Length: 78
Image (cartoon, rainbow, N blue to C red; front, side):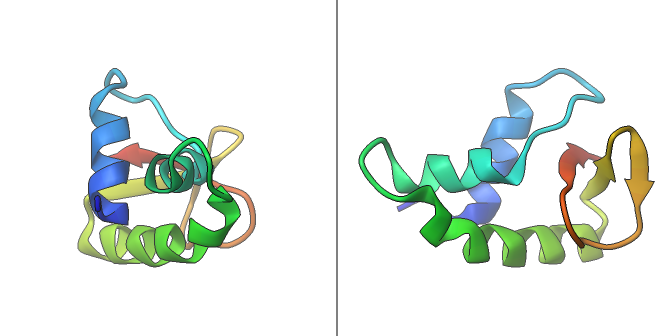
């Protein structure tokens, strides 16, 4: 099984520089086509918190940088 960190890195790797992704995309990647991706959002949020704290990703919403994961957000590589 792929980890949430790996799912995020994989999906960001498929995008161009400066492009963002929704955390639900990582949850859907973890779940597969037949599961309920919402069940994996906790795993994704924890991975995002770790990666953000480590400085490997940035968070934003509607083009504005976020200083913490709270509410809706998009993920990008740092």
